Length: 121
Length: 347
Image 1 (cartoon, chains in turn brown, cyan):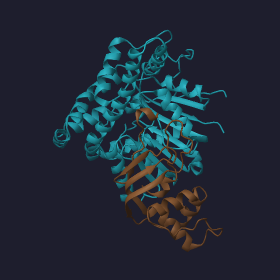
Image 2 (image 1 turned 180 degrees about the vertical axis):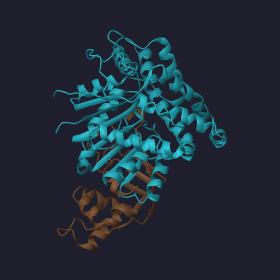
Image 3 (image 1 turned 60 degrees about the vertical axis):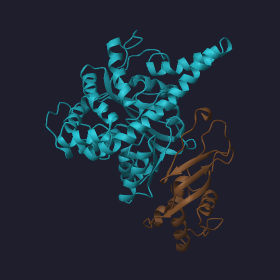
Image 4 (image 1 turned 90 degrees about the vertical axis):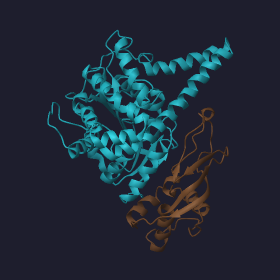
């Protein structure tokens, strides 16, 4: 699971208010190269929840992202860090944790399992 | 907001029956749950058992679907490739197609569906897509490439999700598409984030059609489009409360093997969308356009390679193969329809 996806996933348990973001508990993180595409990254910058990305990246062991996205988005060193955090860090094994209920959604072989139990629906 | 049906040519004309939520078997499932909830004030253990049975059968269905696809996906991919849906053919095409002809037909199905929904003219607006019941991600990867959009796919099968991700990586699409295990009836996304909500032959598996449609609508962005392509049973006529027993029997036999909970009709979907105030609702019967598909699938199953692969795959695959003639029978007798329903969420 890459952080670009984590940035969209919510806890959908019935009644939960604080559904986003899910906290990451990383057990195995793999880095996979992805082609650098500055246009795509600039476009994504507008849509990304920045704090969730920064916290998510830290949970996966990457601390180079600034706390706030810089005003000058064409700054290439920044885009490279953004690219790495957003697309190249892969959570292979671990959990996504609901901040409100503590419920853990497992991530196995890079695939998050967001299925709810009967009593959560 | 008034729902409008788009003008004619390929549209079936819907019987103008009044909106009745108890018409079709699958919507009946919903009402059964409601009535058992009402019973709790009068009876205690009996009704709890009924409710428990209803919910645990939903879990059992989910597991059944996951296991079915865990087992059969590899086999399907080996023989048919990464699109796990019908091909779209010109009606009455009796041409014996090659394997690549069928694959082209599967891609044509995607293109025809997009065109039917009026999506092709709006390419620039399609930024985020969800593929509900994504299989091994054929549609997702195709649509992501076509529109340059981000596509998220959800499936109940962990095997499919992993395979879909691997294929995306192999096609250098990892930044654009990703796949998760999630339930279409409880999608793990915020409201209104997808410009295109795509359900290609997954609606058949949904036990609660009303909830399924509600979720599709919830995650659609204002102005976004929903496309549902699905197997249905024929529309019921005026005054008809249910399918004929022989028709129901045929569908039941298919349901068991393919883990389909219950069938509804195309007009049931239209009614659900109307009730949720979607606009520009269109539907069509494409049964004639998919007629060559099952015979072709059976032919591939009967090849030496097909048979060996089936035997290797296991009982679910074998049973699935044995059930395919029932699909042909269903289509021939007009019980099973291949339908498309498209609409737009108001701004």
